[in-house]
Length: 159
Image (cartoon, rainbow, N blue to C red; front, side, top):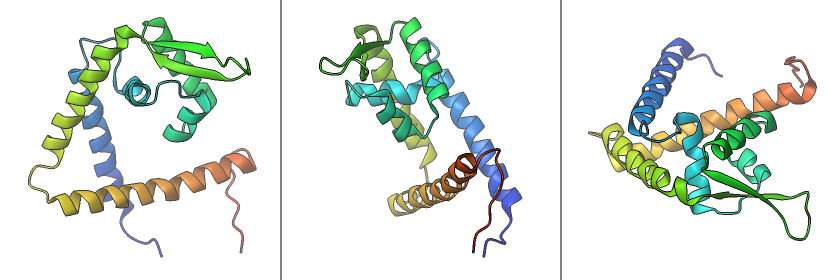
C-alpha cells in the first residue's frame, strides 16, 4: 500500500532536481549547453552513431523532445546527423570535434557533483539510493506511459 507521505519526498525530489540543474548549468556555463542537453552529449561521447530511437529509449523522452535537443545540438555545432548507408530512413548521431571539450567538462562536473552529493554517505547507501530512485522512476514511468497509451491521460483501473 502506498500511504506514506508524498509531500515530503516530492518536495525533496523537487529541491534536488532544481539544485542539480543549477549545479550543471554553472559547471557548463562556458559551453553552449546546459542541463537539458548534457545527457545526450555524454551518451554520444561514449556511443557514437547511436540512433535517435536508442536515445529516446535511453532517456525516456518523446520524439518531439528529442527532436528539439537534436536541433539545438546541431545548431551549436555539437552534433551531426548521418543517414545509414543501407537504409536512408535510419539516422545516426555523432558528436563533432567542437563537442569534445564539452563532453570532457560534463565528465568533470559529474565527478564533482557525485563527490559533493555522496559526502558523508556510504557507498552501499549510495548504491541503495540509486536502486530505489530507479524503482520509483520505473513505477511512475509505467503509469505515465500507460495513461498516454490510453489517451488523454485518463486513469484506467483494471482488476
